[in-house]
Length: 465
Image 1 (spheres, rainbow, N blue to C red):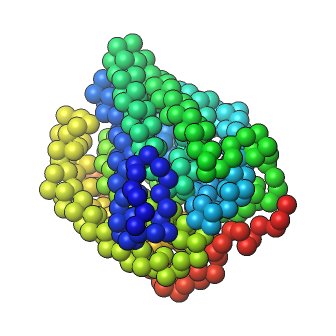
Image 2: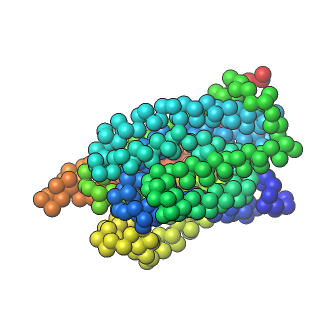
Image 3: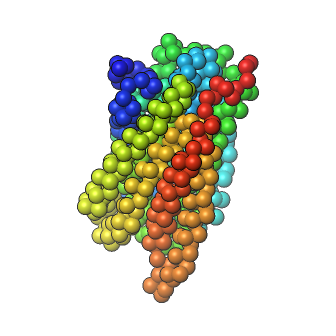
């Protein structure tokens, strides 16, 4: 059995599969929770020190922010797949060039977002029917985050690379440092300097830049595994195209999700500031509840990628069964916790009783859906790790565009009344639950069909230089 060391990359092609998955997942889960706390701290501090409308402003800005930054999610996913497969195959040159191309393409994409993003944010907010009472706050928040997107971009990409190498611990340490810094700066800028929403955004940018710098330093110390120099950073066509081929479907998946969020946010905005603030609170708690699912999904991507690279498909299938059991078990526990203690979680954000009651009612609708999402994330992670990023994209398209959006608007339309002129706000969360359950069923069917097994070793897909 390979030696387990927190500070070194993990070879997931050896050892007991479920143990390797847990060893890799625990630091990443802590990191994901820290990342969610990173975001939630903004909402708590804004809600407590500025007010419910400011909380609504941050929430209304997030779908626009996510849409403009989905490209980096796709690149990070593609990077993790390439790195994990080449690491598993022990191909130093292709591993090195893959990492270098990721660094270069991220720089180009960050520059584009920095220039284009601030120009389109206010028109998008107007299009989404953002209330006049919060639109200026939304615009200020987005402007600062988009101009300073370099930290977010590089941290996500470099974390993906580290995870592909089996090192989930270093990214955790850097994220914890960044999270602590973010909270301190949030309190200083908002409570101390009265900078409001802009202070929260500035604190986030500074903390993200620090975490990205720490990732670069870590990678520069891993030259026994790959070469990290200017030569390897040349954007060679075959590696760039391979990264795009793997990352674009994942990026489109996130873009589809973000577009659906924007369309649903437009519906949410018609319900007024109270429901907008409720949605922010529910989604923050939802973020924590979903973290184990995303964690196990990412863990299975790395596990599958390394074992596919090592040509151990039998091990991939065994690890999938074990990983699925772990993920479903954890999600079941989380569902029970939300149902029992949800009200205490909502009280963290606000003392407004009406808002807490509304948020808890919506949270109960979503709770059981986390078990379904455990299935979706694990099986999608395996397919992505094997190189099939297209199938999860199509499933996301079906569940969000074909199911969630029409259901949300349909229920809202059918429940209009004098008391609810725009329809009942439950429509937002019922539609999400239906999409999650259907996504789990469809993903299971495609996994069992087995087409994803045909898209394996990247080394067979790249032509020689």
